[in-house]
Amino acid sequence: MARTPSNMLALSTKAPDFKLVDTVSDEMMALNNVTGEKGTVVMFICNHCPFVIHVNPEITKVAKEYIEKGIGFVAISSNDVENYPQDGPQLMKTKAKEEGYPFPYLYDETQKVAKDYDAACTPDFYLFDEKQELVYRGQLDDSRPGNGMPLTGKDLRDALTALLDGKSINTLQKPSIGCNIKWK
Image 1 (cartoon, rainbow, N blue to C red):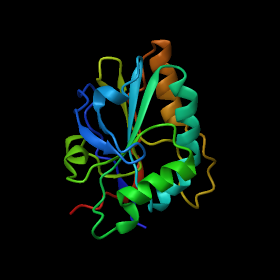
Image 2 (image 1 turned 30 degrees about the vertical axis):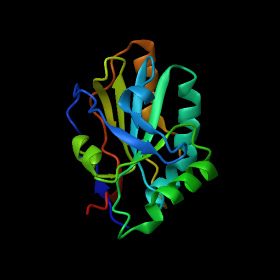
Image 3 (image 1 turned 45 degrees about the vertical axis):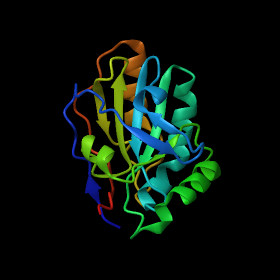
Image 4 (image 1 turned 120 degrees about the vertical axis):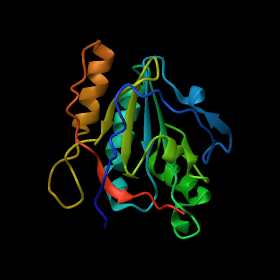
């Protein structure tokens, strides 16, 4: 199990646009289809990574809570499915249904979107404000598989709450840790 940290894209970076297929609805979706009125969370995840499997219950919970507050959520898988077939689109659809994802789960076949976001690992989290400028990137919380720390979503929740309350978001942000994106 590799322990790859986030690359930590520069704060204030404008959200790169994309147009990818949603594996659940089989529809093409662009950034403007998933943005929330008050902000947007873009997550890079996959099906097989133990770090993602570990946080899946909490990301589903956080999304359900904050979607109601005007935050858009989207998950993207950019892994090479030739060498990691368990991350293929059909299995992504199955995983999204099993986990009860309340957000689209998009497939980045060319890996261009992961490169545009400078994504490095799964999971990798990005929070953009209503102007689509990056205000948070990094970890969900301090919990990792086997470290005994409870899943709380604290880091992402704190950033989301500050954004919604119009407060400044702490710029000292910890990178996410997970499996590296499986590049072609």
